[in-house]
Structures are given as structure tokens and as C-alpha cells.
Image 1: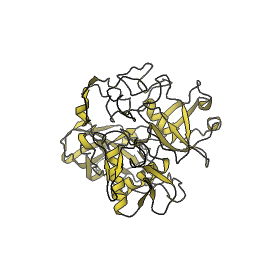
Image 2: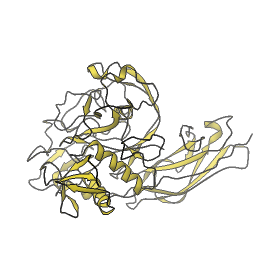
Image 3: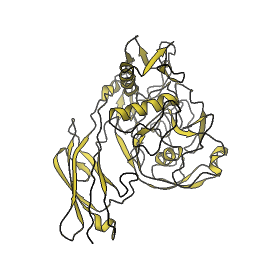
Length: 423
């Protein structure tokens, strides 16, 4: 029996300036797909790929058989201009053996084509669906270790930077969505603090002139700090708005609609699964050991451990290259430093240290004792939000499984976030 492949879509990205290392994100457009008229059950997928920097990209395809509610249809048997090393161009072709991946299935399918150039700071990395052992027996609040399944999703390669947040703040301010009161950013008329500017907190790298937000010199590519859970959620909504996606957060109740397809904060389970990078029960994203060339922990010896706080390193700093501060526009005496390539198995940077990261979940100390197996999203309510990962303030001996609870208004020079996007 012949199947039909209908209702096609593509993923679009908006380029955000990221300071010294600005690199444009790739854009996929004009996606079409159709089954062949013969009995081969092959599907021809065509797309256009643009990248302003000319970077080659990794291309992958996802498919849905329920109109885009979930994207669990396997798209494994593919050939053509897919996978790594695909150059920008028009009318790129992918051949999908739908009959081989989903034998005997008939129905309407929706497909999406994604591209990643491995360079852009606002780039997203595919985290494949799978099971993992969540928790760590060394920590009381991370027990018991239990099996968890998460669907595939996209996650920011890097922590959100000062420049990206500054872009958000200026745009939101121009729309009248936010205001600044006593150096603190709020939703217009709201009482939940989003972030603090350098006018009242010297550790903030964001300045406000009365009409414009700016980033202090040399800090554009460093992770945003002094940002609350509220501010991180509001940024997610703004980024969704910029790309024409659903808004996941109700900024009045702060509830997250997981059925919306837009940017949001990761669930605690998604964060830990992604941080582990496909490894099982390892203390760090890449394995068993750590040294100062691999991550920015307290007294790691990196060249940014000098001057006034804070001391985060630029996002993606640990890429196996010999760096100097000048590479990142950092003022003052220049120091060279050899890093190890500490990207994890899913292509994510800084998942162990640098800054701690907000998760979407409410925090409950004993949640693991009754956590559901499939896609847990945390308690329905609570007082504190979950923060995961360690920071430049933390000694190296704290591991991936540890958990922290933070008031959603909490801000510090060691707290940041990264985003995720459902298909």
C-alpha cells in the first residue's frame, strides 16, 4: 500500500550579533517533500541552505505522523545532501527511505530540515531521544538514581551571552515590554525582577544609559549573569517572538506550556541528559577526570581569573585552541592559554562549570523518589526553581548529578542559562 508524505515545514533562524566572534547562523528554507510514484517508498526532500559566512553545515531531518505534536518518526535511512559537510546552496536533495525506517506504516507525515554550522553562538544542537540514568548516589537530593526517557529536542550550544541578552533588552524596551527601576529590569508594571544592570551591581556586564542597553568592553561573548529565572523565561519568549514561534511562557502566571513549539528553559531531566552527552554515570560531560584546561572552575588557572569579579570565560572558550584574551576583545594584559576540546558528546560547551544554569522545574528535594519515567517536568508548584551545573566559583570536585534550589528572583555573578526548543 502506498503512503503519502504531506504537510511540510522548515526551521528558520534569526541571526543575533554576538560581539567579537559574530558568526551567522545557517538558514533552511523552501523545504519540499514528496513520495516517488513508484513502489520504492522513497521520499525526495528538497531545501535551500544559506549561511552568510559560507560555513559547511550538518543537516538532519525529523518527521512527525501526528501533525507536529511529536517528532518521533525515525528518519535514519537517508542519503544525499544530509549529515556533515554540506555546503550552502539551492535545491539541495535528501532521499529518505521511508519504507525502510517505518515499514508497513501509512499516513500523512510532516518533515523538518535542520542545519547547524557548529559556529554561531545562537546555534542549536540536536539532542537525540533516549534513556539515561538520572541522579547521583553521592548527593542526598539526587537520589535515587533512576531510569528516565526524554524525547529529542534542540539545545543551545552555548550559554546565552551578554550580547544576546542586550539585544533582547533593547528590542523589548523599544516595544515597551520592559522598564528599568532603580537599576533593575522588570516587565512594564511588573514586580518580578528580570536582571540587574551595572548601575547598581558592578558584577553585571549590562549598562543602561536611560534609553539604551550596552555591554561593557570585552564581555559581549561571556555568559549573561545577574539574571533571574523570570528574566531567563522572558528572554525565551522574546526569542520565540523574533522567530515567529509559539510563546511557551505566560508571563503573568509563569507557567510553561510544553505543547507550544517555542524556546523555553530545559527541564531538569533534559538538562542532565544533555549534559552527560551520551555517557553513563560519569562525573563530567566528557568522562572521569578534569583539569584547568577543560573547564572554568574555581582556581582552574584560566586567564580570566584576574581583576574584579565575575570570572566566567567566554562561551565556547574550551575548544582545544591556543587562546589569548585579545581573541575575545578583552582589555588589559594579554595572556595565552591552551584549552582542551571539552565539548561533550552532543556538541555542548560549558555543561559542567562556568556559570550555573536555570532549569524550568520547580524544586522538590525528594522529587526523584516519585519522578515519572517519561519526560518528567518537575513538581506542579513550589517555592524555588532548579539550577543545575556548577560555576567559576565552584571547586572542581562537584559533579554533574548535583542539584541546587534557587528563588526565581535570585541573581548572582555565577548564575546564567541556556535555551531549548522542541520540534
